[in-house]
Length: 115
Length: 109
Image (cartoon, rainbow over all chains, first blue to last red; front, top):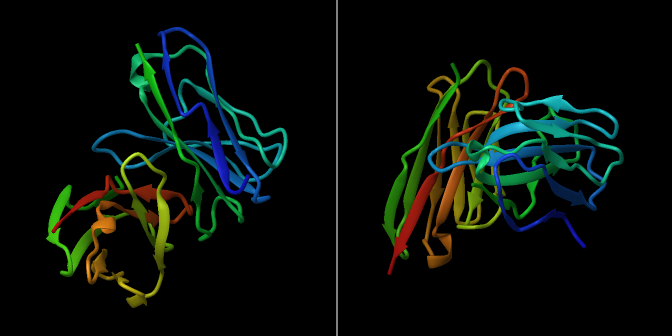
C-alpha cells in the first residue's frame, strides 16, 4: 500500500452503537489527524496525534476518542453514535508534528450515516 | 472568532481563466494552503503561501496579501478535470489549520 488507507469506505450505523473507524499510513509520518467534513462547513479537526503514544483534542472532540499505539495506525472510536455524527470522516498525516507548516496528506474518507 | 470566507460556487468555461478568492480573519497567521477536492475524494495539496506575492505552479498560481487578509487561486487554461472544490486553509498563531467551506468550481464546455 502507499499513502493512507481508511476503513470502512462507508457505514450505516444505528444510534447508540459503538463504531471504530480505521486509519493506516505507510509513510512513517509522525503526525496524524482526524477531521469531519459536513456540507457547507470547512473541515473540522476532531483529534490529532503528534507522535506515537500521544494524542490531543481538536475543535470538535466530544463523542470521539482516539489512540496511537504505533506510528502507522490511528483509529477513531465513536462510543455511542448519535445522528449528528453523520458525516464524512477523513484521516490525514504529516511528516512534522501538528504545529508546523508541513503539508497534510489525506486518506480517501469514510462516509458514516447514523440513523 | 476565526473565519475563512470563500464563494460557495463558481462557474467557468473550458479554456478560460478563473480566480477563486479567500479572505480570512484568524488569530495570527503562519501560512495559507490551497487544496483541491474532487467529489467523493480526499483533498490534495495545491499550494502554500507564507510571504506576500504570487507563487506560480504550472496552470495554477496562488497569491497572498497578509495586510489585507486575502488570497486567491488562479487557474488558467481550464480543463474539465479542474471541476472540483477548492479549499482555503490558514495556519493560525497556534499552528492549527482553520479551513474554509470550499468553493465548488463547475467547468462548462
